[in-house]
Image 1 (tube, rainbow, N blue to C red):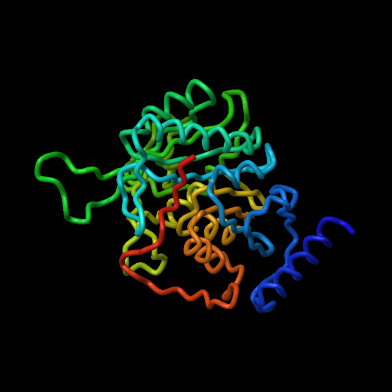
Image 2: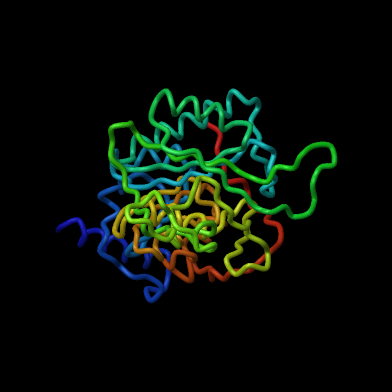
Length: 321
């Protein structure tokens, strides 16, 4: 029996065991067993282009085959005491947090292809430490600032924080990467709008109406009344992930998010024709991933219906090793 036939058989057997309606699933062409070890004892569900795993990141990453992922987006907890419900993302000290981050960065680079790209986020106060580590060990491609407007509540003793850093990296300076600049062009507001002529060109021509974005990205944060809102306290906007996925991957590529949370990365990746692997240790978020990527509308007899709440009582997505 070939790999795809075995995958289909085993998947249908799991559906029967868990009493999940078969009409909720589609068995597709992408063989996730070629990327993730099947016998890793991790609860997982998949369809034709989305695999959702219930696990802490380091455990799951160790079961992903090396050099198998085209693009990684990692939005790990920031160690700033964010309340996820039953606990907070707070380590005993900063050194332990930094060391933990280095562990998952190393595991991500192990599974990343030589021509792959990784983007990751953390709090502004910790990014310098990780920037230095990546610069010495791997290669920094770009330092991106995601900026957004304030909610209106700001400190009166200090300037408010209105941005989060994103580091774009790869394995080495000589490694080639995917960068589809034509897929992410934005309006050129200066010269083109003023109908200026660019005399640097021969012959002189009007300024282009489109350009490649710079490294300061202005995307609104996800608000409660927005359609894409999920019950997660640190959800990232679909527009931000769409730019990353379009620029740094192609259709049919494998996109990994080891801290999936609201599963925005997987949802956008599958919509754009990529194959998504999403990992989260929280069962509530795991179920969001099943629903949001179109794998199923029910799971283990539970109807997966979107119910918007302003504050989640779910456990944090982080894990301390």
